[in-house]
Length: 610
Ligand code: AGP
Image (cartoon, rainbow, N blue to C red):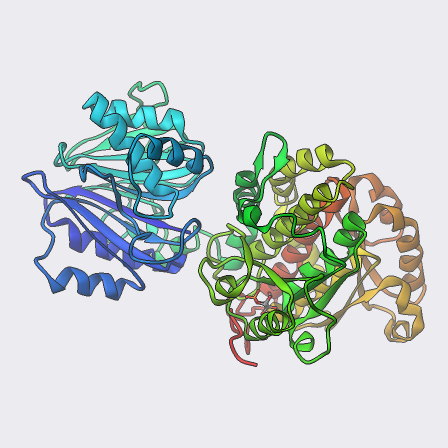
């Protein structure tokens, strides 16, 4: 996700900003920029697509920016391709105010249209530019920066951490926070704002955390913080003990655990901008007409975990759309003879948007006359650019090789797409119930994440097993594929996922006393059948970890030695909760085995080779 740094002090701001941005690079970004206000009130901005090195050369190439107050930003694109114009800071058309922003403004289009009707022109495709144009619009009316800030805050909806400069207020920086982290650092040579402590550790360890709806006015010597009613509020200061490496992971031992814990927020960011007035709105498909109308077959094409999302999609979309849905491994799809053409829709799923097998499958599909819709996490990636339509998961950058938050956001987006299409086909029952469940989903994920000790304890009992089976029926089978891959790729334990009904056709011969079986039974209609599969493996000596919902916990726990119990949600969304215990189990098993969890052997985060 984006990174923010700001400085109000007694030394040149640019070196401090660049140092802070460098320490935020781990968050992943595609462009960067800085803005400073000189002592004589001149606002200057430099920004560019690409790595910090490009920005550095831009800054050193011409007259260096001078000023002792500034803001800096590394951008992880969500709205608007990664390019120079869309990079932050954004400046209003009066060239007085600069803003850097982390988050998503959900109602940016509505505000942008209303400002354009007032004759305000926009240069970028970002939601952030709406903030600064609206700020300048109000500032021009009020000629008071704080009045303008509070008017903007009453208008925008969404998540935002912001740094704001105004050339009429040299020496002053404003910081705002709602649903996106922002902290204030108190240093000897000035005061700071930053998205996370990593950016500050070389300057100060004394910080305070802005809470939602708080606004701070910061100068070299003072920090004033106001609440949503503009009342001054005193905040507790904290001294950060972390070292820089720990700080990058937000205090978590590994990026993988941090990203598992980020899933409630990642799902919320992916879902909420696409819900309005109780409906699913996919602006990305506005020009697609009724794309699903003439579709007689859907292929979901991907690799690895993204393919496992496709497997869940097969079961769920077939049920919603009554259209044949096939989940295909991209590496197989491109060399098979898929029946394509304009009545076959191809959905490509990819976190990186650069997986070569998936890209090749996309090109094959287009060559054979099919439309391609992709679900991608990296804005402007190759797969996104070559698709006819792209839906972005707004999970933020995923650093750990083993995907977690990208997987869950891909799944929620794929299911939303299925529900969106089903409504188009006028065959959507329970639409309102699903919308309610989507809104409640982040809190349900948080519930599963509440008791990490439970997973640590179970993992400490089984981390020495050298063979594990995952079994399930229907979506539980697809879920098992992901649980098994998570375990394999970070703990190096051989495991496989089996359709529970298929075990007796051969593989059950491998079950012997002590074999660990993770039995997934979250798909309510088949819980009884799953129970008999558990009895089947237990009678051959297997040890069983059962996973099911609260409703059927008693049934499964009668046979299982350990339990993962998850809250219930709408059946189409249940797998999103089901995968969380499997991620945590794999993580803690790998931790017990002392594996390199974030960078497992032989693996890369994006497989750009065949
Ligand atoms: C999942 O944990 C793996 N890192 C891997 O299977 C990954 O899902 C696969 O390589 C696909 O990557 P993509 O989503 O970037 O296309």
